[in-house]
Image (cartoon, rainbow, N blue to C red; front, side):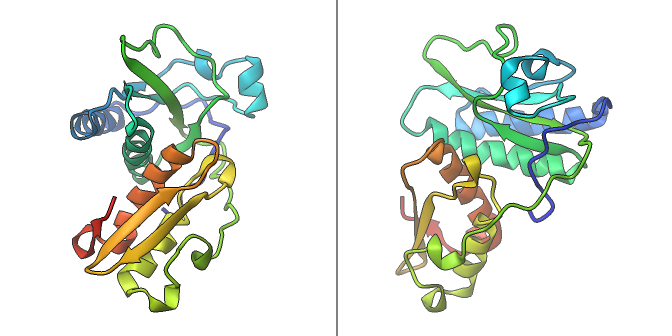
Length: 219
């Protein structure tokens, strides 16, 4: 989590077959657990090619990406965020770099097609970065916790700290956690661009930092 940063520039190096295999296996688990239709696309440069959107997003050399889609529902965005970030952190562990992308890509009719009743939420660019990205400015823990941090258990404090390392749209960090008696936690998204996707991302980070064995979600 601490090493992962958004990367938009990639070098011309194919992802090794063994790494593709490991990522594909995780994609299949995420689809099964999250009732999603995530796909891994490799060696396909048109989504981030010489288009106006790619230039606006400052992308270069990106030819691999996850397509994040699923059946339309009120919980789809949050599930996409949760399982997408699981893929992001695994890619980081395997030596790759990534970037969540909401709008600045070109929709490819072949690789991004959705079935009836499905929705394409966003994509994640991945590959070997030309750089490792940069730190983003973090809010203080008390800005994203309704419970004063000094009154919260250590595991909750670790969870909030991990959530603050999570990528969010335009680095808005529009989420809030609250400690509830009997070791429960409430997490909600504030109004904002892709904030429900962000909520899923930060909840995955919170679980890693806090330890899933220490609490249960209250929502």
